[in-house]
Amino acid sequence: MNNVNVAYSVANSTEKDPKKRFKLRMPGAFVILFFLTIVAVIATWAIPAGSYSKLSYDQSSSQLKITDPYGKVKSIPSTQEELDKLGVKIDVTQFTSGGITKPVSVPNTYQRLKQRPAGPEAITSSMVRGTTEAVDIMVFILVLGGLIGVVKASGSFESGLLALTKKTKGREFLLIFLVAILMIIGGTLCGIEEEAVAFYPILVPVFLAMGYDSIVCVGAIFLASSIGTAFSTINPFSVVIASNAAGINFTQGLTWRIAGCVVAAIFVILYLRWYSQKVKANPKFSYSYEDRDEFNKMWSVTSTEGNENSSFTVRKKLILTLFVVGFPIMVWGVMSQGWWFPTMAASFLTFAIIIMFLTATGRNGIGEKGVVDAFVGGASSLVGVSLIIGLARGINLVMNEGLISDTILQFSSSLVTHVSGPIFILVMLLIFFVLGFIVPSSSGLAVLSMPILAPLADTVDIPRFVIVTAYQFGQYAMLFLAPTGLVMATLQMLNMKYSHWFRFVWPVVLFVLGFGGLMLVMQVLIY
Image (cartoon, rainbow, N blue to C red; front, top):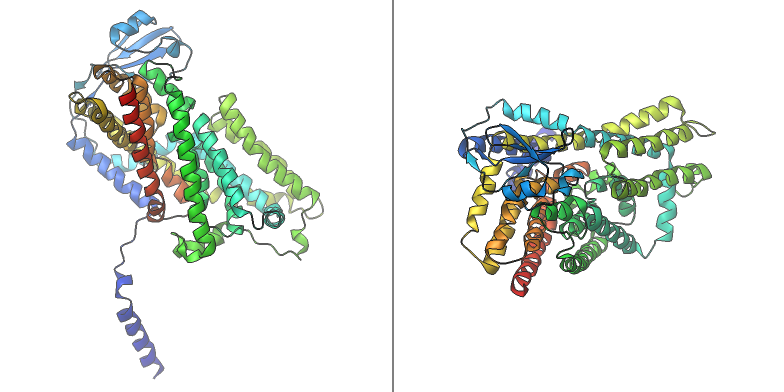
């Protein structure tokens, strides 16, 4: 009889929930990137191969080097006169001073080349090579994970969170507001959205303790920093290098960019406030509610007020202080000292070693083996995030080696040669939106596209800084969505589904394209 009841229950549950069996689910980050790698390989067969000549500066000989589409290299004197002959409207000091380090496309040099299709083996080999090329940021992430593991093992997170939640009770959104403002400022000044990955471990447990969800965490950090970068004012990795490659001073259009950044900041803060209040009032409103328990298990930090280990001792305060102080030092190093991921990793490793010593010794110390295991465990938890970054770079390798990126750029430039005024700049905005998927690096897209597309502004009598602004808006509207960019690593780190993120971010993408397009049209009409 029991067997019959069990069989009936199983059959009945199947009849009641037929939709669940066939529910379409968005694949995870690894599957999406694997699929896009296959698409990139197929594209190398379908899209004609071609290339522009590339211009770079050789420090050893103090000369400019031109590599033509067929790979032949020619050296020329590093003078402004030579650049003018090439039609490259860039100050020569940008090359000689190291302001521009990546090869620059030379206008009017595009050549169709013999097709270079990628074979099936490129699917896996590009993943491996992309991962090795991304080793600098991967080491940074692993060191960061190890640092987090040690701080968690010390019990400092639990005690600090208990103290913080008491002080912020009733004013929870204030922390989101402050974090978002700082991220927007960091984005507009130095493009900090890549480095912002370091802030999740310290802020996510805090947001969870305040009753928010994973979407709020990504919104306050990644979304806010990326909005700041989209409306960059003096970001050297975006607007400055793009302006240099366009042959103009980056201060041109600065007033417009500041005004745009202020409006965008207000929009994002209001959007975050609306969403966070909805989640606070009703947790089931959360776009990621179905994964809430798993996310909380992964990131939440619980403590009991009466527990002896929850007391906020001097040692725990010192450990948390050391942990937190590493982040402003990182920002300072990036903005003023030219730090990159290896230096940042070394900086965090220094703090990790000091904290390991404090955690291992003393009355409640966990010993040498305990801190080492904690470091290794923390690092291993972020291995997936590191691999995602490498896989995304592998897609770009396939397209570059298949010589299809320049073909897409040349085709894009042909779309705007016979239009003028507002239509011209709106088409340019959409072109940069598409190119943002193909070349997710802001500095990489700047040096590849600006020498080709910026001169087109002269043909329709508009300032070149408007092209630079279109590049910012278009590329970053795409980078909120593009799996080839940073977003997949962010979602993997927080174990968030892409579909949940898309549901939250698409209004922001429309805002950037809509408000950005309006600003661009106003600039064209005024000038």
